[in-house]
Every structure is written in structure tokens, then in C-alpha cells.
Image 1 (cartoon, rainbow, N blue to C red):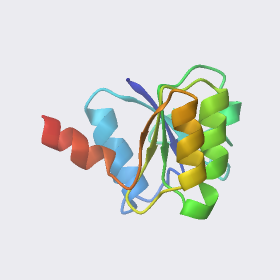
Image 2: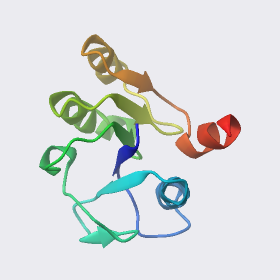
Image 3: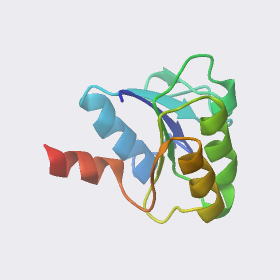
Image 4: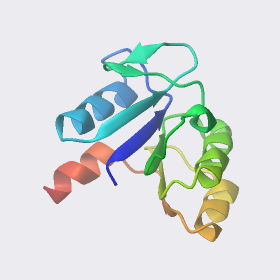
Amino acid sequence: MRVIAVVGLSPKPERPSHFVSEYLQEHGYKIVPVNPGHREILGEKCWPSVADIPFPVDVVAVFRRPSEALTPILQAIAGKAKAVWLQDGVYHDDGERLAREAGLLVVSNDCLMRRHARAR
């Protein structure tokens, strides 16, 4: 899984969504920013939502409040992503259940960068 849509990617380098995405880029992953307030982040075109991305993504990583996680989860299911990754502090019981029932790998309340660094 090499193409990661990052929901809530911030242009601010001090934000976890930014430095995690930058780390993943540096390790060969294609980052697809999802942020309706920006045109480009980390040198990549931003999309307003996961549903607007016109090509397949493998993972939808969510850096939003738990109360805002359901929409990108449902869009990941509809877009036939392979996985949903809910970053530290993010979880949504109903959304996670729906994603699993649709056959997606689901990880919640964990960090992509930390998990990747540990596996190296």
C-alpha cells in the first residue's frame, strides 16, 4: 500500500499531519492531501474530500476529530480503498465496523510514522 490520502493534512510543519506525511513521502509513499482550504501541500495537489480524488488510493489516513471521522471512512469504503488508518486519538466505532464489514483493514488510535519506524 503506497498511495495514502491524508485527510486533514496541514500546511503547518509543526502539525502531526504534516510531519507524518513528510516522513512518509521521504520513505517513498505517495501522499494525497485532503484539505478543502488549500490548493497544494508538500508539493502535491490538495483535494477537497476523499470522494473527489480521481484515482485509487490504498489507504485513507484520518487526522481529524473522532466526530469528523465517519465521512472519510465512508468515502474510503465507496472509493474501494484497502485500508483506513485513524491517527492517534482518532476512532469511530460505527465507521470502523462498517469499514471492516466492507473488507478494509482498519487501524485506529495509532500513528503511521511510529508504526513504520518500528518496522524498519
